[in-house]
Image (tube, rainbow, N blue to C red; front, side):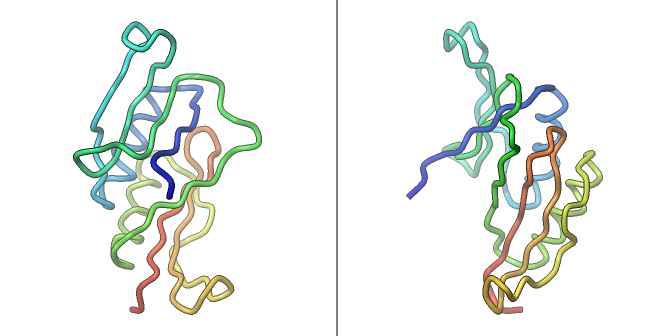
Length: 128
């Protein structure tokens, strides 16, 4: 079981704004923000569903190659809302919402590239 994931971002304020908007339809919010003074070196933000953050972004040079992170959505409507919010927040299309039956018959996902080119997905595994 994965406890949390952290990715690096070249433009922390821009990425923080992107994730605030893109993850809101999935019920995520900014739960923790840390400065380098507090931690000794890491400056970043933790997003999640209260009470615990499970997705972190940090101010640093982004990973190369970019990473892929998929967030589970409770419904196909949430996947669609994530996609719209992510594009409105500056994300780039990397796969419009739709079924991906090559994974399994009910796999409904949407993909966007974040400001650093990371492939961010929302996926619902439930039947329509």
